[in-house]
Length: 344
Length: 295
Ligand SMILES: Nc1ncnc2c1ncn2[C@@H]1O[C@H](COP(=O)(O)OP(=O)(O)O)[C@@H](O)[C@H]1O
Ligand SMILES: [Mg+2]
Image (cartoon, rainbow over all chains, first blue to last red; front, side, top):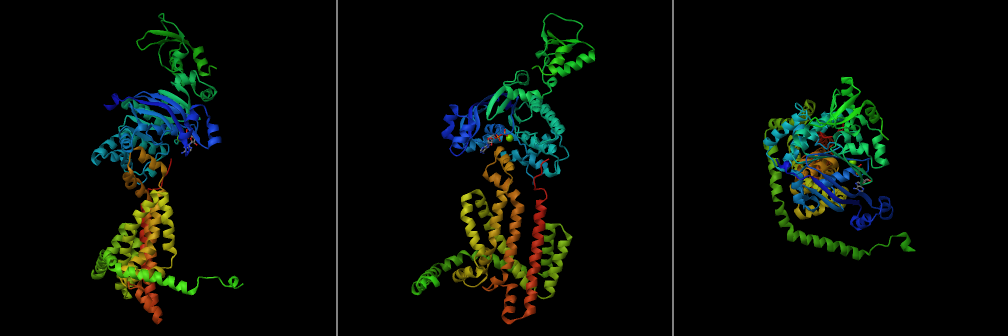
């Protein structure tokens, strides 16, 4: 109920400098001092520079970047595991930066939940007791928390494993526990810091599916960190790309793949399976007059799926249609195959 | 060139005066506060006497069963239980039962006291680096100062008896308890602690739900060390009136009774091995699920 009115997350002019005298250098950084100069002259590390991101309620915001680009630093500002040097972090309209210790604890207990790269489960507790951890911290009665925990364990596919210990489970299973523990909190914000990076590729795909399926029901505001573009494109409603502590591009997966902001992004995008990302409307020839005898392709279908439809229908061209069925354009096999193999 | 061959020390009169001033000062302190301090330790004396009475008044088959039951509950190992049984039967057969019970009750009280004092100090030490810097040298002194030296002020203050003996044993045996509590808490996985923070745990919740449970195997190793060190002090403590297996050893030294010494010495070794195996096996059982495995 609460998440229907939940106001999303807004990060404004966020700066983070690591070092004993961070506050003294923030003006210089605002005026253009670079990360390298800051390190060479003053021995401080620039973690984040002027981050501005709006994450609407109920969507998955992916933050992507290479190792060391500041992803973990950024996500830890949302629940203030790290204090910023300057800037605002508004969660549901409240500035997390201004909270006192007690408010911050309440905020963490009820508004956010987090999933970690190395799972961070309690090794001395069973799967079930790990799952109720957040509820226990909130002070909820044990029998009630156990009901909630059992429900989420079943939902992430761990029914029957309640009495096992984390070290008796595989990595993928342990992260399911991590996910169940976070979901049991029923907080509007779900923070996932490289939650799947430690998992094998197949397990990782599985877990991505689990998350996407869940999100259809729970509609949380999810912040998902990854260094893997395929994962970013698959999960992200919005993607922000981070390099050396700066956001260099923000947008949907279509924006990132079709219009990379610079060579750094283009380099990432080069290796991507474009057929699975690019939507058919990005490659069609617009046309609004009614066409007959060609298979209809709903707008938003990926290039790969369009090819699948055309080959099943044994057709050379398809009509792209809006959700109401109105024709929007024509797409040909040639356009589709061109889109698969890089437009640049 | 005299000063070159002989160290130029403080002149004899001044040195004598210095020692006299300190001694007189301490004696004065003892005279005026000795009773108050003794009163302060009265509850401890009651605890000691109660523990000893329980061990001595309870019939031996019941004590034996009790010890075996504790050993089994802690280790789940029949082998260790059989070892304990054999040790106790031999001790009884060679007529050392009563002294052994006195020693065990003293070790028990000493361990309880060390845990009650040592764990809170260890927690404080783990909380702040400054605290660690202050306490560490104190522990070093406690462990390296020959125990005879700190027997002197303890005896001056409290006289000869059970309580001063117990205090001397605790001073000697508590450092590993404190150090290993500190170490265990400091070794707790940072990621798990961060997770507790992320879920909004306060300091108390972090301590009781994360740090202490994860440090428990290390703390258990501290308890084991404390028991072993306390047993090593049994003979010295008997010099200031602690009854038990130490006193026959002392008598054996004075009168050159070789066999008496050996028997009582072996009884101390026997209960040491018993305590060691039981507490170690328990520690290992605790360890079972506690190491962190990724993937
Ligand atoms: N506590 C810290 N002190 C100094 N530098 C830090 C600290 N934490 C992170 N950094 C630096 O900030 C940068 C970003 O780190 P991080 O956010 O962990 O990157 P990512 O999660 O993208 O791999 C790195 O250069 C790292 O060395
Ligand atoms: Mg990281």
